[in-house]
Length: 139
Image (cartoon, rainbow, N blue to C red; front, top):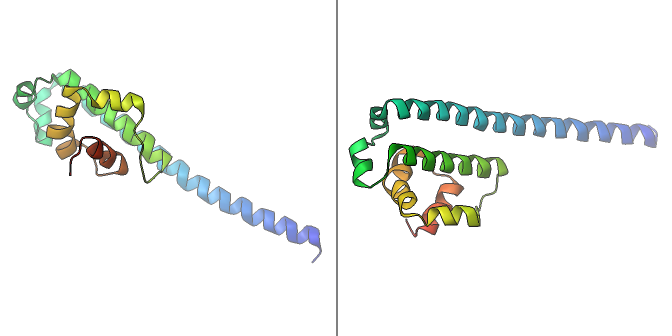
């Protein structure tokens, strides 16, 4: 085999490997995006029927006791989902929270929502959730 043939074969193998990696990464992103779209549809239903929160172990009464409206809760929840999606797609194992996120986390309603509702009932344990727990000094 001449050098050109060997080089062509190597390039073809590299291109195939890149194609496979791209396929899996694209599929991962599509799963996250589809999940977020469906979660948002569910949240729209919660706005119309707040009693649906009970399916997650959250009551409207308990939210009110914590001085968090349903609209505030869903906004906070969506913001956390967006952050989780961003960091999941990014793929880093150690999440560094942005100034924007830290500013939001400093809000008492956000902290209350995270500690009492979202962390327990609404979000998966991911490096993103771990970073928020570390910010709040939670174990």
